[in-house]
Image 1 (cartoon, rainbow, N blue to C red):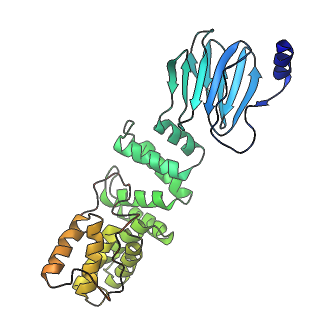
Image 2 (cartoon, one colour):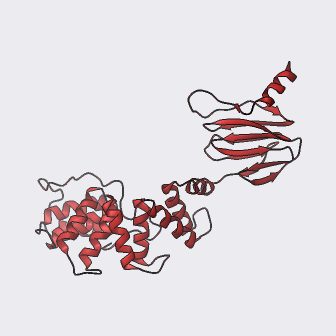
Image 3 (tube, rainbow, N blue to C red):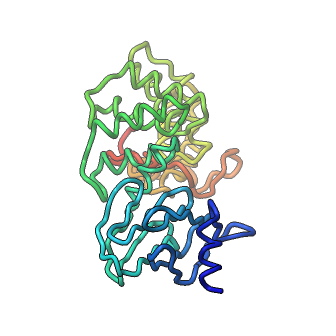
Length: 311
């Protein structure tokens, strides 16, 4: 009976380990074509008999077990022919052991790289941040910029903004204000808060054109409404100094207080000065929310020093 079951199993082109709604699952230890193995985790698990072993398809990844080696997406890991292979994807990252000895362990960088290769723009952006900062991997600026350019070309506002800030400050890449302005505008038009703030800075500071404080204040307001602390500080300065808007110390103090809540250093200093100058600690009737700023505050993940001072 066991022999018949094994023959039937091997005769099928594909055997599903799972059925029903996707969920992390465990399979008991089993033997196919002389290979003993188990599979834990993953949303989709499939088995394909192959010459001298078995192929496990786990969430689209192909893992071949041939007795003498384990092959994952073309990369080979040697093992003994008698070893029991345990495949574990329960934590979201692939780990493979042979008789309890770890022979392959996927890292977060590996996972991001796979997702980026598959076209995930958020993964491209996040992997680029790792490559720029050297977090969990070696610094690789050309690869990081290529990833950001690719994601930006696919319409990812976050990557447009990240590139814009890099070109604006000349960190990791040579400063290029025209390119920074172009990318910032693209991100801003897609509703990205830090991108809107950077457009405001170009207009306020008269970079590449004459200063336009009124237009700058409008862009700062859009970004500030999204919780961007640096934009809240810049808009507060505009209200304090009457740049592009009517001077209003109460509104300025409210904005500085919001930036202070997000631990923005310049906003904190400006808030203290506004209180010294007579602004109320709270701004009733100012028309601005006094709740803590959340979301995209400061650089929102950019791998350069946090936006203090006027930026």
